[in-house]
Image 1 (tube, rainbow, N blue to C red):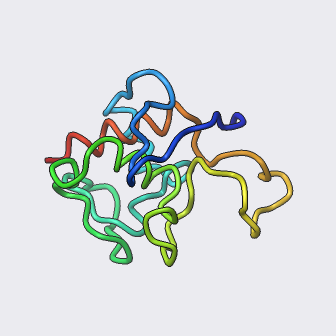
Image 2: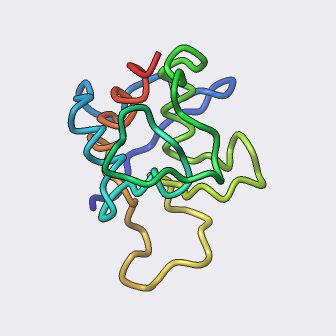
Length: 126
């Protein structure tokens, strides 16, 4: 993964996209992938028949109606900015993390385009 670019958090959102417009199909693949997003470990998703649902995080059906794309982006980038007690990993933030294996230090879990793909997928869950 690449070194993350800077982003601005404003009133609970990252309004500016981190990369080109996201692709919802790629985002869905990332969300359901054990190798990248692994989101289904904690969340339930509509029409995610291949993945057993998690129950640690909130269900994501309808999340696109509840949150703006900027709010979704912040949650993917660094959910700890919304809830300091969150156990959801920071998928794009790299600074200030303490329990990171040496070969992963300074590298985000998802690159900027992958974040935008996930946001595009979540935004369509209405």
